Image (cartoon, rainbow over all chains, first blue to last red; front, side, top):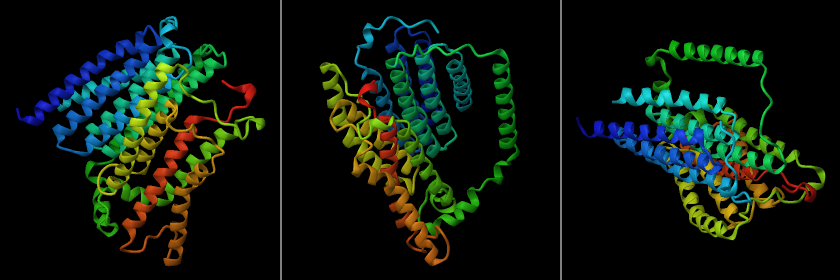
Length: 95
Length: 314
């Protein structure tokens, strides 16, 4: 097993941890839980992009990861800007 | 290991798409849409299509996700309960049938192209003439420039359509501000905006420059620019973009304008959108930088939304 294989294994493991975040994205129960799940997926996605870039020895994949980091943060800010605090929001209906 | 990665990724993409469609919770559907965009970006990366991956992560997952979140908040502010009416069974069955047919059609079209039959060879042979090394930029701004020129005007048209939805008495007022109401959250967002905006500017400049030889380009750079601007505006670090700001309006038409002028100048040398030999790269980079600014301004104004009249303030 060479280094590229190790990076692929890391990418698979990261992808599986990313899958765990999908449970939170589905069940919530609070609004912020859904949004934090999206953030977690974006962060893990950056990790997968980085490991994939290392495995393929392709530096431009790091640029794709950078684009992901900058834009993932916009969604959470757009969400929390709502005047009322979402922590007080009652749990939303089950999906 | 690559096979395992591809299989898991495919399963997750189909799963998140299904989840986005099946959930009855609007926010969960938006979140699954964003996740779907991120996973699709990873799938493009796995296929070594970094240009497409960047565009998907930036526009599919990033900006569209923000647009959907803002739409949900505006709807809630207007008193909408965000519960859609039950779809009749025949409509669901019809949608499933139409989508399955389209998927089969696209699948058979893709599989019918032999791997050796792609355009990579002919394009690679033409690229040295342009002086750029990224085949995607070559296709978008030289071999298929007409199409890209029209796309830039489509984006402008979308913004004009959004503006047209504002009631007459809303002009020239600003769109509903997204400033954080709470002082605590506001200072965090403000500091973050001050930090991120310069980073986004540097990154956008880099993405356009890298775009001529490596994956990147005006669309990705413009999206990063818009993201940085909106974060700074939400935190209050810069003013909320207004539709009646004359500088912003000039920036909006700068990109398509420069593209059109260079295209028309080509007529003098032979035909529309003809780059004189030796100057192709300089012109492509000039078009890309002005396009990135325009796309950034357009997306930022699209996110800001239409102007809001005092009695409609949401």
